[in-house]
Image 1 (cartoon, rainbow, N blue to C red):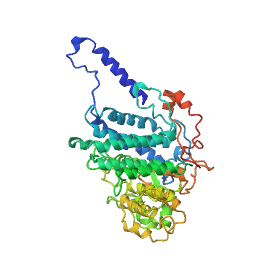
Image 2: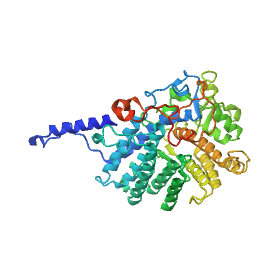
Image 3: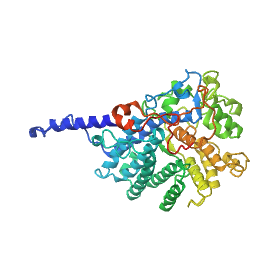
Image 4: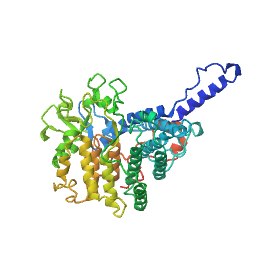
Length: 507
């Protein structure tokens, strides 16, 4: 974050001194930095956000107990033995570099007559900052993204940042509603193609995510209720019936470096050759067995492939799609579960040849389940639906996103299965938490881990690699930030990745 600013400042100074002689003004200085138009920066920033999220979502998928690794590789003690330091999980640098791009769009939208990009850029800024807080706790916010104006930014309190993000999203909504995309620039928006109505719904849905993350913090109900009621009064609504994704519609290409980043990491290269990491992530035994026990096999068949993986027919398992052919790996197991004998990531995520799927940032299912939680926790909140209706729609939307027959979702309404049938569920909030955990599987591991830390649900098995009950509750601040901003990192006190909880992680 700071190195990039220093380099830019140095180059600007060099350009200024090199052009001080008036007789040279007629020449083009080869050292002059080109000026980027915000629309180009915005497109690249969205693509970069998708690429940056792959790794934290992978880590979250493991630590939420959804995925583990196959035994075709030496066990990763960093991931499954929790032997990590401040040299691991540095998602910080990439995120702040990406945030600088969104800040550029916000700061220069007016100058370039591209005001319509400011609101969407603020939404993306809020999305990334929340994820940084959820990974690291206190982070630079009010003093960040100022270039040479603040090379050692102070850290802000995480709860305060959460409140500031709600205000930022309010600003974003004002910008979005006041500035229709110019038709010539809709292609720069590789999420909604310039549809400001959808951007407003995404902004509100992100606000809902931020608000409900705090739902178990004592004394926050009134604040959450007030802010949700403001969303309802504003009138733009929430994402419904579709998901929010980067790319798709021909953006990703069958060219090296231009594939969907998930497909490129765990799927296939541009020529269709299987990636080496295709055999690494496996569905956890707990996930597979839980879905079987609940008769949730339609979603299981979309979440994972059978043993043997994807067949020569793209998107189809090598073996018959019966429950017995889906085998999960015990979390952290280091032997006994080779790739051929365990279930890989399924067709909801990876199908050979489908390199141009959008990278999902948020699903409609997540939004509906947040609404269910809000209605269940705060009965008089001004949401029009019932907790039950939102819950059932959340399951339906999960089936849709996975590509499963939604008739299966309807069957759960009267199934008498705990945590699936609303009326039969003994603890409604637990049912919502468990359905969130399922709906995040394959799509948003970081959110799954965050919700797991918030609720402790479902009660997943401890890693085989760890003899005691410890589990990570956050990451350490990366050593790159400690080296460049030491005083402000030190001011955060001693960080224990197993005990220094985030403000919304109350137990």
